[in-house]
Image 1 (cartoon, rainbow, N blue to C red):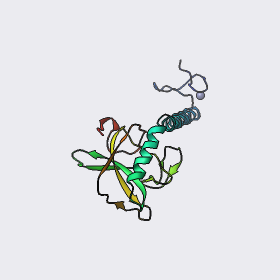
Image 2 (cartoon, helix red, strand yellow):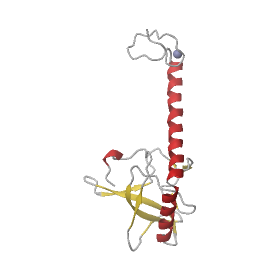
Image 3 (tube, rainbow, N blue to C red):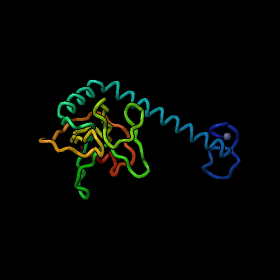
Image 4 (cartoon, rainbow, N blue to C red):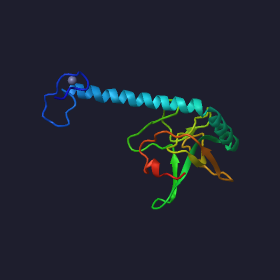
Length: 171
Ligand SMILES: [Zn+2]
């Protein structure tokens, strides 16, 4: 006899994988898992902001220092090997995603990290990234800089809708 994982009543269904007595308990289990997921994510973000505070400050200084004066945002990119053979820039908004989650836990509607105040980058894997600046004014075009800036980003978060598996990233 199986017992419902939520209410502990016996599960009467014949299905071999039935773990819940009803759709109510099944959806309760799902929302419970979602709450746990978002809690874990919140803790991860807070952890990054706290533990990596000195590195974030260093990134802020270096990114500010190299910023052209018309810049209002920046992106960070990593090289995608064949068949792409191009830079993948972060952050990005794809398809239905009109917003993205920032490290602060709030949402941004921009496909670039804010320079002032400084928004720490969110990347899928720790590593060395190229920095690209975008104009403060709409349409926030990419700015050409004399030299390429590459910076080490030591922390990472889950980045949804990435075209590559973060595990296979060699940044
Ligand atoms: Zn139940």
